[in-house]
Length: 426
Image (cartoon, rainbow, N blue to C red; front, top):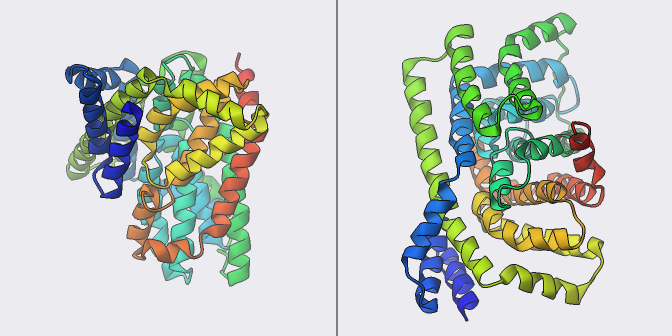
């Protein structure tokens, strides 16, 4: 009965449009009252969920990404991507995806990427004759690449949700090949759609201009090497690397580019504080919800239930993917990771699936959910920038969904795509 109250209250509040943090907190509080436990347990679990040292990496990476967006680094990366791939069919679509891949290695946030790259690329694409739906769909799907590349915030949340026993450095490394594969799949899809619609290409500026754009964007791109190289080599932890990222972002935007004004600095600071507050309250309430699930032995029940369906890991992984895809359509990514990791990670381990590999599957799967109504935060941002409705975008997004699901299946059933690169650093 307690489990029914927990999930029933949560689902009911979700259906009537209650913010996700209040859904999680209210469901946990009412369940604790029903079980006769002290209500203070809910607040203790919320506090313990937020009071994790590794969690400091999230606000600092958010701050670094905001500083870079407002400091002009995103514009320089887009210019470099344009010189590199703009001459391909559907040129600005290819630029959008390439810029998202490069910027994703800096921001680590799909929403930030959709806002930054989309704000630059969608108006240009519409002005050059690209359909608004095409511009929005390319932007929203390409923004998901950031979830797989370091410094992905959600990789950090997954590691914490798994008890802090999974190396963040391994997770950062494991997401690189799937992230690049996802980018390639989107570029092929964008090319096919552009070819069918007759979209133009951009003139190739010449290798000299490509080199100039590269040098101009190099100070920003170096942050990718600093974050990944520092964490992977053990020079600093993920939390320390986030602080380094903030100082480096300030150095580049204030000293190198001299593009960060006082107003933009204040706006970036306030924006990072606001985003951090929203993220942490969701993480806290989700931690309380996840603790109750463990207390009620829901993960063990899930293992037993899946065992009645099949003992084949292939079938189990397919079933988990379907469940996660459905959850991703109406839940935001952060709380979903915290809630589902304690449920499905023991199942995955029980069937011999590596936790790092499962983390990449989880992140990619739930990332696709960020682009799926009714709670598709990335899609909402891209549609707002493109000034079209979600349903207008949905009518033509299916080829891009197909590319995403194809990559998800490849990553799910070919573990080497996730595990080969981390193994090279051990």
